[in-house]
Length: 207
Image (cartoon, rainbow, N blue to C red; front, side):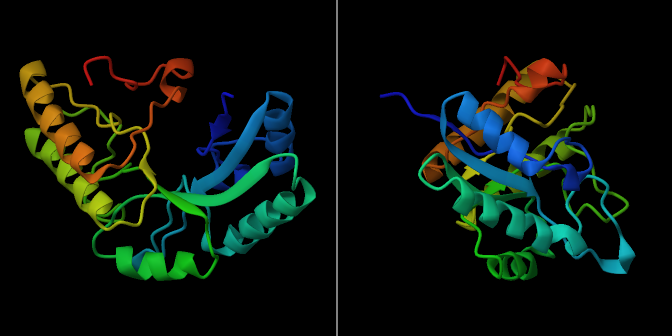
Protein backbone atom coordinates (compact mmCIF):
# COMPACT_ATOMS: atom_id res chain seq x y z
CA UNK A 1 0.00 0.00 0.00
CA UNK A 2 1.34 3.44 -0.95
CA UNK A 3 2.08 5.70 2.02
CA UNK A 4 1.67 9.46 1.66
CA UNK A 5 4.02 11.31 3.99
CA UNK A 6 5.35 14.83 4.45
CA UNK A 7 8.18 16.02 6.67
CA UNK A 8 8.75 19.59 5.47
CA UNK A 9 6.08 21.80 7.07
CA UNK A 10 6.52 25.28 8.54
CA UNK A 11 4.25 27.22 10.87
CA UNK A 12 3.44 30.92 11.03
CA UNK A 13 6.14 31.29 13.71
CA UNK A 14 8.81 31.44 11.00
CA UNK A 15 7.20 34.48 9.35
CA UNK A 16 6.60 32.93 5.92
CA UNK A 17 3.76 30.49 6.54
CA UNK A 18 0.10 30.99 7.39
CA UNK A 19 -2.70 29.20 9.19
CA UNK A 20 -2.89 27.38 12.50
CA UNK A 21 -0.93 24.22 13.25
CA UNK A 22 -4.06 22.08 13.55
CA UNK A 23 -5.26 23.23 10.12
CA UNK A 24 -2.20 21.58 8.59
CA UNK A 25 -2.97 18.34 10.39
CA UNK A 26 -6.60 18.33 9.28
CA UNK A 27 -5.57 19.03 5.69
CA UNK A 28 -3.07 16.18 5.81
CA UNK A 29 -5.73 13.79 7.13
CA UNK A 30 -8.23 14.87 4.47
CA UNK A 31 -5.65 14.18 1.77
CA UNK A 32 -4.73 10.70 2.98
CA UNK A 33 -1.41 11.38 4.67
CA UNK A 34 -0.27 8.73 7.14
CA UNK A 35 2.73 10.65 8.52
CA UNK A 36 3.19 14.39 8.90
CA UNK A 37 6.24 16.15 10.27
CA UNK A 38 6.44 19.74 11.44
CA UNK A 39 9.86 21.22 10.72
CA UNK A 40 9.98 24.92 11.45
CA UNK A 41 13.25 26.74 10.83
CA UNK A 42 15.19 26.19 14.03
CA UNK A 43 16.13 29.11 16.25
CA UNK A 44 19.81 29.98 16.47
CA UNK A 45 21.32 31.95 19.34
CA UNK A 46 23.27 34.27 17.08
CA UNK A 47 25.95 36.51 18.59
CA UNK A 48 25.82 40.32 18.72
CA UNK A 49 22.03 40.35 18.93
CA UNK A 50 21.55 39.34 15.30
CA UNK A 51 17.91 38.43 14.54
CA UNK A 52 16.98 36.22 11.61
CA UNK A 53 13.81 37.13 9.76
CA UNK A 54 12.79 33.68 8.55
CA UNK A 55 13.17 31.34 11.49
CA UNK A 56 11.32 30.62 14.70
CA UNK A 57 12.46 32.80 17.61
CA UNK A 58 14.03 31.45 20.75
CA UNK A 59 11.04 32.82 22.66
CA UNK A 60 8.52 30.91 20.50
CA UNK A 61 10.28 27.55 20.41
CA UNK A 62 8.61 26.05 23.47
CA UNK A 63 5.18 27.08 22.16
CA UNK A 64 5.97 25.36 18.85
CA UNK A 65 7.08 22.17 20.59
CA UNK A 66 4.11 22.14 22.96
CA UNK A 67 1.67 22.65 20.08
CA UNK A 68 3.11 19.79 18.02
CA UNK A 69 3.20 17.43 21.02
CA UNK A 70 -0.43 18.25 21.85
CA UNK A 71 -1.46 17.50 18.27
CA UNK A 72 0.42 14.21 18.41
CA UNK A 73 -1.74 13.15 21.31
CA UNK A 74 -5.01 14.51 19.94
CA UNK A 75 -4.64 12.70 16.61
CA UNK A 76 -2.91 9.55 17.81
CA UNK A 77 -4.14 6.56 15.82
CA UNK A 78 -5.35 8.82 13.01
CA UNK A 79 -2.09 10.30 11.74
CA UNK A 80 1.50 9.94 12.93
CA UNK A 81 2.79 13.44 13.72
CA UNK A 82 6.53 14.10 14.12
CA UNK A 83 8.39 17.00 15.71
CA UNK A 84 11.28 18.29 13.67
CA UNK A 85 13.36 21.31 12.82
CA UNK A 86 14.97 22.53 9.62
CA UNK A 87 18.33 24.14 10.11
CA UNK A 88 21.63 25.01 8.50
CA UNK A 89 25.08 23.75 9.30
CA UNK A 90 26.78 26.84 10.70
CA UNK A 91 30.19 25.55 11.87
CA UNK A 92 30.85 28.07 14.65
CA UNK A 93 27.46 27.57 16.28
CA UNK A 94 26.44 24.04 15.42
CA UNK A 95 27.54 22.05 18.48
CA UNK A 96 25.83 24.46 20.86
CA UNK A 97 22.73 24.52 18.63
CA UNK A 98 22.36 20.75 18.64
CA UNK A 99 22.63 20.57 22.40
CA UNK A 100 19.92 23.22 22.71
CA UNK A 101 17.56 21.46 20.29
CA UNK A 102 18.09 18.09 21.97
CA UNK A 103 16.45 19.54 25.07
CA UNK A 104 13.16 19.49 23.11
CA UNK A 105 13.52 15.79 22.23
CA UNK A 106 12.90 16.32 18.51
CA UNK A 107 12.14 13.39 16.20
CA UNK A 108 14.24 14.51 13.24
CA UNK A 109 16.28 17.31 11.69
CA UNK A 110 16.35 18.51 8.08
CA UNK A 111 19.45 20.15 6.63
CA UNK A 112 18.43 23.19 4.57
CA UNK A 113 21.52 25.29 3.84
CA UNK A 114 19.97 28.70 3.19
CA UNK A 115 23.22 30.56 3.91
CA UNK A 116 26.88 29.74 3.50
CA UNK A 117 29.43 30.56 6.22
CA UNK A 118 27.39 31.78 9.21
CA UNK A 119 24.17 33.71 8.59
CA UNK A 120 25.04 36.56 10.97
CA UNK A 121 28.37 37.32 9.27
CA UNK A 122 28.32 40.30 6.87
CA UNK A 123 29.95 38.15 4.16
CA UNK A 124 27.41 35.31 4.42
CA UNK A 125 25.62 34.53 1.16
CA UNK A 126 21.97 33.58 0.77
CA UNK A 127 22.03 30.33 -1.19
CA UNK A 128 18.93 31.19 -3.23
CA UNK A 129 20.36 34.48 -4.44
CA UNK A 130 21.85 34.58 -7.92
CA UNK A 131 25.62 34.19 -8.01
CA UNK A 132 28.18 33.41 -10.67
CA UNK A 133 30.89 32.88 -8.07
CA UNK A 134 32.48 29.44 -8.17
CA UNK A 135 33.80 30.11 -4.67
CA UNK A 136 30.23 30.50 -3.35
CA UNK A 137 29.18 27.31 -5.16
CA UNK A 138 32.13 25.45 -3.64
CA UNK A 139 31.33 26.82 -0.19
CA UNK A 140 27.71 25.67 -0.44
CA UNK A 141 28.75 22.18 -1.52
CA UNK A 142 31.40 21.78 1.17
CA UNK A 143 29.18 23.16 3.94
CA UNK A 144 26.31 20.79 3.11
CA UNK A 145 28.67 17.82 2.95
CA UNK A 146 30.20 18.76 6.30
CA UNK A 147 26.72 19.11 7.78
CA UNK A 148 25.67 15.70 6.51
CA UNK A 149 28.82 14.13 7.93
CA UNK A 150 27.83 15.24 11.45
CA UNK A 151 25.21 12.49 11.34
CA UNK A 152 22.64 14.83 12.86
CA UNK A 153 20.32 15.10 9.85
CA UNK A 154 17.62 12.80 8.43
CA UNK A 155 17.71 14.25 4.93
CA UNK A 156 18.80 17.26 2.85
CA UNK A 157 16.09 19.76 1.89
CA UNK A 158 16.20 21.33 -1.59
CA UNK A 159 19.85 20.38 -2.29
CA UNK A 160 19.59 22.37 -5.54
CA UNK A 161 18.74 25.62 -3.70
CA UNK A 162 22.11 27.13 -4.66
CA UNK A 163 21.34 29.56 -7.49
CA UNK A 164 24.52 29.43 -9.58
CA UNK A 165 24.22 31.48 -12.78
CA UNK A 166 27.77 30.96 -14.07
CA UNK A 167 29.11 28.46 -16.57
CA UNK A 168 26.70 25.52 -16.95
CA UNK A 169 29.49 22.98 -17.40
CA UNK A 170 31.09 24.12 -14.16
CA UNK A 171 27.72 23.71 -12.42
CA UNK A 172 27.24 20.21 -13.80
CA UNK A 173 30.74 19.09 -12.81
CA UNK A 174 30.53 20.55 -9.31
CA UNK A 175 27.04 19.25 -8.62
CA UNK A 176 27.88 15.78 -9.93
CA UNK A 177 30.69 15.70 -7.37
CA UNK A 178 28.24 16.96 -4.74
CA UNK A 179 25.68 14.25 -5.44
CA UNK A 180 28.32 11.52 -5.50
CA UNK A 181 29.61 12.56 -2.07
CA UNK A 182 26.09 12.70 -0.66
CA UNK A 183 25.23 9.31 -2.17
CA UNK A 184 28.22 7.82 -0.34
CA UNK A 185 26.66 8.87 2.98
CA UNK A 186 23.31 7.28 2.09
CA UNK A 187 21.33 10.38 3.07
CA UNK A 188 18.11 11.06 1.11
CA UNK A 189 17.74 14.23 -0.97
CA UNK A 190 14.47 16.11 -1.14
CA UNK A 191 12.66 16.99 -4.36
CA UNK A 192 11.03 20.24 -3.27
CA UNK A 193 7.84 21.27 -5.07
CA UNK A 194 7.63 24.77 -3.60
CA UNK A 195 9.86 26.00 -6.39
CA UNK A 196 7.21 25.11 -8.94
CA UNK A 197 4.38 26.94 -7.19
CA UNK A 198 6.46 30.01 -6.32
CA UNK A 199 8.61 29.98 -9.49
CA UNK A 200 11.95 29.63 -7.75
CA UNK A 201 15.23 28.37 -9.17
CA UNK A 202 14.60 24.89 -7.80
CA UNK A 203 13.86 22.12 -8.56
CA UNK A 204 16.68 22.61 -11.06
CA UNK A 205 16.29 20.42 -14.13
CA UNK A 206 20.05 20.20 -14.69
CA UNK A 207 20.51 19.02 -11.12
